Length: 340
Image (tube, rainbow, N blue to C red):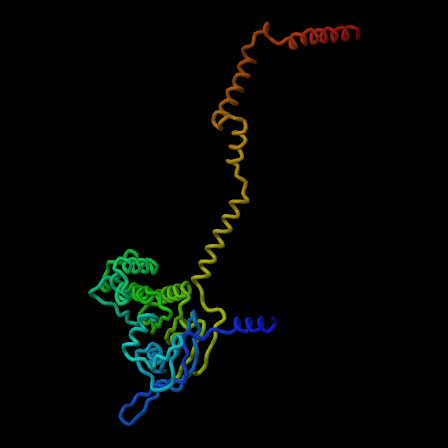
C-alpha cells in the first residue's frame, strides 16, 4: 500500500511539460559568401499561462526568434516544440492548420483590412474555423465590447485612432481563444498612455483565459509586465529573468475598488437604521407614522383647550377639595400675625 501511495504522489508531483520548448534553435541567413547568425543556438521553455517577453535592441534577433516560434519562418537547426509537436517538421499546410487552431497574433502595424468594419475584422479568423455566421458575429461583438469598442463595431480602420485599431487587433487575436498569442512590438506605434492601456488589456484577457503570451519589445518598461524576461543580444540569450511580482496595475485598481465597496457595505451594516427602528416601533403600536404624529399633536392641543375652557363648576373634585385648605391656611396665617 505504501508503494502504491508513493507512486501516486510522485505522479501528482510530476510537472506538466512546457507549452513551448525551444531546443538549440538556429537561423542562418546567407548574403553572398557571408553567413549571418540571426538566432544562434537558443534554448528555453515557456510554461502554460506564462507571459514571456523577448527583450532586446533593434537587430538583436528577437523578432526573428518570434517568427520561428510562430512557424512564419523555418529554423535552420534545432527543434521548436509547441504542445509537444515539432513545428519545424510540419508542412506549410500542416502549419496553417496548427496556427489556426492554437495560435493568435498581435502585430505592430495592426494589419487590419481597410475594406472591413471592426466587427468584420474580428469575425474574419472565425470564418476559417467554420463557425456559423450568427455565432461568430456574436463572439466578435462580445470581444469588441470587452476591449472597449462597443460603440465602434461598424467603424472602418481609417475612422479609428491608432489605439482603437490596435484594440481591434487584440480582439481579433483573442476572439478564437487561442492557447498561445504572439505579439510583435504591439505598442510600437502608440503613445505612452495608450501603450499602458493596451498592455493592461492584453495581460488581463490572457490571465482571465489562462493563455500564454510571447511578446517582443525593446522597451524595458513593457517587459516589466511579463512573468519571464529573456534578454537577447546578437542572436544569443544573455540572461533569463523571472519576475516574482510583475506589474498588475489593473488588478490593484480592481482590488482597491472592491475593498472600497466592501468597506462601504460594512459601514452600512454597522450603522443603526434610525428610520427603520422608528418605523418598527410605530408598526408595533398599530399606528402609521404620520397618523401617530398627528394623534399626539391633537391630544396635546385638546388638553390645553380643556385647561383653558373648563368652568369652575366642572372642575375635578380634587381641585375643589383643595381650595378650603388653601383658605384655611391663609386665615391661620393672619391669626398668627395678629397674635404677634
